Structures are given as C-alpha cells and as structure tokens.
Length: 183
Image 1 (cartoon, helix red, strand yellow):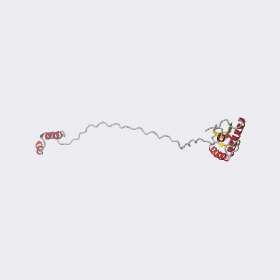
Image 2 (cartoon, helix red, strand yellow):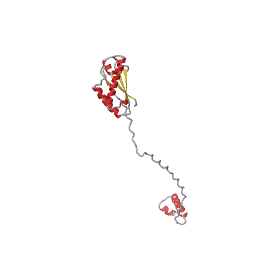
Image 3 (tube, helix red, strand yellow):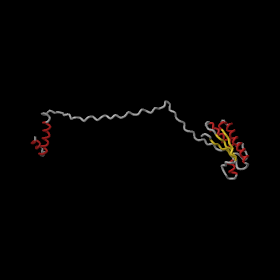
Image 4 (cartoon, helix red, strand yellow):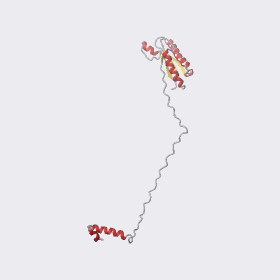
C-alpha cells in the first residue's frame, strides 16, 4: 500500500500515517464488516416547564365607564346701579346662564352675597345688600332653581372688591356674588 501512495507522489511520512489510520480502522472493524458502535448518549436534559400563564383578570359582567368629575362651577357676579336693587338687563342675562348651570347641577347649593359701595351708613348698606341678594335669589327661583338650594347674606360695604374711592370702584363694589357651598 505504501508503494502505491509513493507512486502518486505522497511524502513517505504522510503515506505512513494514512496507512496506519486505514489499517486500524480496517482491522478494528472485524475483517471488513462495518460495525457501528453506539456511544453512550448523554442523559437528556430535563425539560423545563414554564409556569402556566396567570388566569385572566376577572372582569365585571358589565363594564361601566366612570363619568369624568364635573368641572368646578364658576358663577360671575352681577352688578347693580347706585342705590338700586332691581336687576339690569345685563344682570338678567347673566342670571339666566347661572340658572341653566344650576339646574344641570342639582347637587350644588349656592350662597348669594349682597354688597354695596362705601357710600351710606352701615345699616343702610346692610339692608340694601340684603335686598340685592334676595332679588337675585328670587329671579333664579323664577327660572327654575329650587329655593332650598339658595341662601342669602348681606355684607353691606364691608367687603369691597376695589378699595378706591371713585365711580369705577363703587360700580364694581355694588354687586351680588355667588359662593358654591358644596363643590
């Protein structure tokens, strides 16, 4: 066999290694029979079980969408003419909007505060402030707001919006203010 490999120009050392390899394989196989040896297989890796998925969250039979919280209600002041408690056309328009808002929010109660400018006595202005607050309350009631939801108070000239002593300040101070009681 070596002589055949030398014919093909193989170096003697490589030829010898090749012959040995072939011989060992040939002789170890029991006379030319091809025997397949089984090697001991590695034990199978344990199967990792993944935990089962969590059960779906229990949903109520009927999903209810919560209504967003209502926005805070802001009611604009209404103003009065000097030494008067009757409502102007502008005041009536403002109060019509207030009445709509209050009818839509029946859970709210309102305190109406009557105010005056600094001219006049304390007693006179307290009485005038009360007449102004009552005029506003009565008009709101006529527009469908329940009287039991409306209370009145008079501060007379004690709580001015504008502390100056001029016509512009006095006009701002002659007013009815609204305080939401339970918002």
